[in-house]
Image (cartoon, rainbow, N blue to C red; front, top):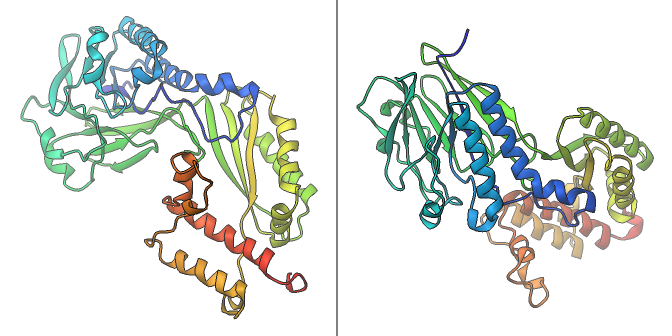
Length: 408
């Protein structure tokens, strides 16, 4: 049975921003990375047409045309025309990247595309065969600010109501504002913050752009039945996919055995001939001796090279970004030693137990490097990065400061 209403919710297309986070980009991946945002967006628009949606919701950060250039405008114009030919309207709430005020006059939008006004909530009735089937209450904002749910209250027709907005929204008190579906943008991770009578959903980005945006990315198909019950279906669109693969091994695992394990897993991940290009970070746990070997020799670099040679040019390709072993759990007594190692470990433990205490490595950077990406990393403001640096630092301290004969 056909749904009473069907629409596609997409956001954070960021046509101006290709995937990054690679220390070196191989020649065979350059074109794929540059084209990935467009391929992902194309798949979202293809999905809207294939599923015969009533309309498409774009919840911000679709494109910064000043950064993306003419290609982005031409691409969107083509996609909007395709949707128009299918009778599909587009409702677009601008976000931080879009910043309509700077450029929209230079590109008149086609009639099927409705841009939400900035800093106020506008209301549009979506019609099917001359009959209203939904009302969209939308607002554009140039900043990722807190969404005021009360501003989306309405007293109009008894239609399925959609709030289209970009920014942060808390799940509390949503039921008081008579909105059936909150179409949200501004988060790259897919997240549903409320479900049931009221659904509030971030569909996430259509294309991951850095290693921490691991796993499938896409858009959301929303089906609404006669009782206004909402069903969300994830549609993957990413052309390039970051993955963090965690592999547990036996304590006795050798480097060669580890290669066979990783090779088998890479083959399993790439068994879909129509799947995305995979960019993988391998994280190994379970063998302290193997972890020490991977850190203290060329073993890790050799494994990365072998995996790249075996899988890089397959379809889809698998490119290993890096490989690292989890730092082994240190014996508690090491922290109590009255030695240079003990003092070092106690200092690291202090920072681990006090995550709010500033810890920066910027002072150790070479002159001239205090305003670049390396400086931002050295500031250690990202909590997972800080924890990882402290753990790896402790393992390195044991390796360098403990007498050789005392090491396991």
